[in-house]
Length: 329
Ligand SMILES: [Zn+2]
Image (cartoon, rainbow, N blue to C red; front, side, top):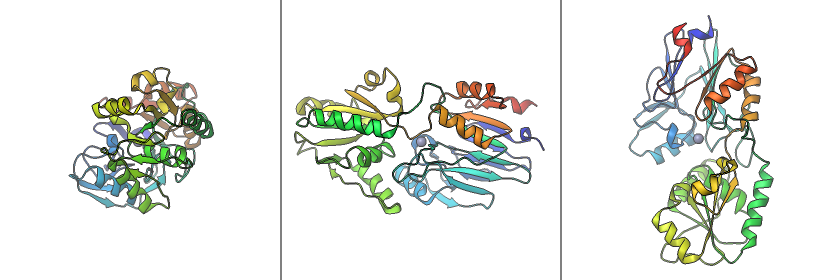
């Protein structure tokens, strides 16, 4: 058996055909095949149709909340082991064991343990399918303490102006609330959409989020902090809120390493806060897994594939709907 007998392609998710004719689907738009794995509940990984999925209980609850029209039944299979992925609450990687082969699908991963998230620990496998969102060497994230210190200094510099902090509804918003605003003696408010996600996470994990629901009619006090979903940046009501309250704005993301981040996102300040692996962490995962063949997907998949090829790994990048070389050999 050669690892090339395991066919991998990107087509509405990652599709794997195994040597014994099974079809595995990872984070597909349409659940189906022999087994479907859902790594986590971020929108770009969630199915758009109903079906049966192998995922953590929390991911099932978050998915149900975020896609109320999709009915996802949680399944299990003895050949598929879910591993903590360290990306967001409930996220899992999947290790599949075949007759004479094994395959590791990472989904989105972060190897740094932090707060309530257990970092991803690599396990050896013959085939590795790895996410490469930050798969270029310039993406090296600073220690988390540095980001917290910088954010606290920024907030303390103007204590009598409200601050609006932006982060994704699921994942980043909770990190901001626990890490940045958790210890501050200022009122912290957020939206119902973030509070609902907080509640689902708090129900499942032993964590608390200390927030008040933002009331549009009451507005903001001078020293308030408002945590908003990042997709609200530049919406008319946020622009109006900034104008009327003289609020300062900050975004939290791994992309804040990019020079153009502040301008592109339209915020006063960007703070580096990532729930993914940086380049060196991704490379370290590959070395630990030590696969016979490596597939890269998402983000800088070609750059990362080239870097790993230089290290001697047989590597393919998985562009959507593009057949890989292994389909032809
Ligand atoms: Zn994600």
